[in-house]
Length: 154
Image (cartoon, rainbow, N blue to C red; front, side):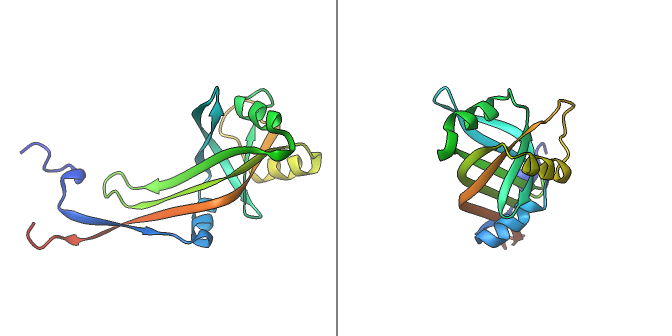
């Protein structure tokens, strides 16, 4: 019968468990790819980027003329409100985790900081990533998605 092998049709129960902030940041630091969400023309914009976790902050490298760099530059000292999300979800079992941090982002201008972040991260694109954005999480949320035994009536 069609769809019998589709994991989304399984009778297996799934549970989501909230993560505390420490565990959420640990998981976020264990991966290098995520998505940054910011405002562009009064609408939410999402960009896939790579990141490193430095002293509890999310750091991403970017080009100076990139939309995100311009957005944080315009925000100035107050910072720009952003969200950052990363996850590891198994497409077959639908288990894994997802973490979202929300906070303020600043364009990094200190040459020593830029050099440090350049040594810690490796951009995935071929363009020169000569700027960095540092996001300080004010709100940290995370979920672990787990599977349990099949329902007894399945």
